[in-house]
Image 1 (cartoon, rainbow, N blue to C red):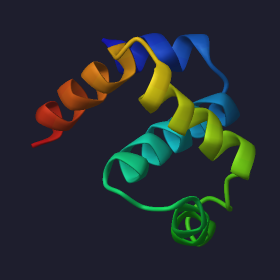
Image 2: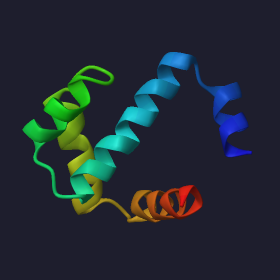
Image 3: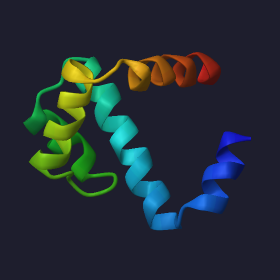
Length: 79
C-alpha cells in the first residue's frame, strides 16, 4: 500500500531521490563514512552530495527517531 501511495504521489525522479536517501541512512547506520557512501553510491545512482549525506546524518543523531523506526520495519519486511 505504501508503495502504491508513493507511486501515485511522487514523480519517478522523486522516488529515486527518496530511495537514495533511505540507502544513505542505512549506510550511515552501518558505519560508513561520508566519502565511503559517495564512492559506493557513485556506481549505482550517482554520488550524493555531502550536504545530503550530512542531512541524513543529522536525522540519525538529532531526529525524533521515527525515521530509524521506519527503516527497521522496512528492513524486517524485506527479510
